[in-house]
Length: 249
Figure 1: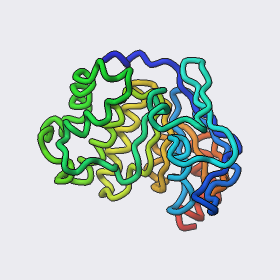
Figure 2 (figure 1 turned 30 degrees about the horizontal axis):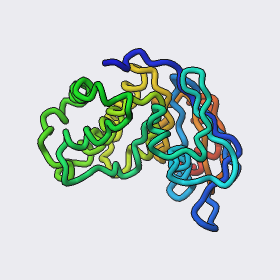
Figure 3 (figure 1 turned 90 degrees about the vertical axis):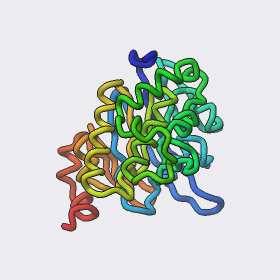
Figure 4 (figure 1 turned 45 degrees about the vertical axis):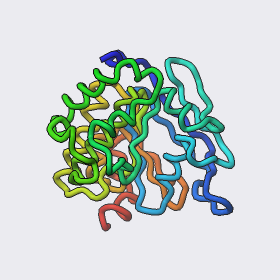
C-alpha cells in the first residue's frame, strides 16, 4: 500500500473549552498524543469524551483553547477548519456507535471512507488491504451493513477509517455494544493496526481493563476536566481514581 511508509503525526490539545450552546462540557482540557503512541482517554458516560473527539474533528467548535496536529513536521491549528479539511490532513475518526450506512453494502461503506484526496488514487489497493486485515469483511462484501453483527460492524467502522489512509486515528468507544470476547478482539486489532503503520491513536474508552492492555499512557476525564494523567499503563493501574470509577474500590 502507498501509505505503509508513514511519517510522523502527533496531536496537542491545550486549554480546551467546548460544549453545546450555553452548556459547557469541556473545561480547560490539555492532553497530547505523540507519534506512534496509543493514548487512552478514560471516563464513564457523560464526562466529555465524545465532545473532545468531535472538537478535534471540527464537529464541535471550541470556545477557547488550541488543537494542533503536527503532520510531517508541519503544525496545523484545527480549530476553525472544516471536518473535510481535517480528514484531508490525514486524521481518521471512528465515531461512537459506528455510524455506518446500514442500507449500503460493506464495499459501498468502505468507498464512503475514501474521499480524502490523497487516498483516492489507491482505493482498490486500500479495499484489498482492508479485506486482508479483516477477512470477515471480504466474506461479507456484498452484505448490507445494517444486517451485520455488532462485531462485524465495528470491523467495518475501523476499515472505513483506514480507507482514508490516516496518519492519526481517533476511536470513540470501540467496545460499546460488543460482547466481552469481541471487545478483546477489537482492542487487539487496534493495537495491530497501530503497530503495523505507526499510527498515533487517541482512543476514548470506558472499558478500563481492555483499554489499558494496549495504551502506552492515558488520561482520566471527569465532568469535563482531566483529573489524572498516567505516564504509563502501570501508573493508570495504580491510581485511586481508577479504582473508584472502574474497579469498584
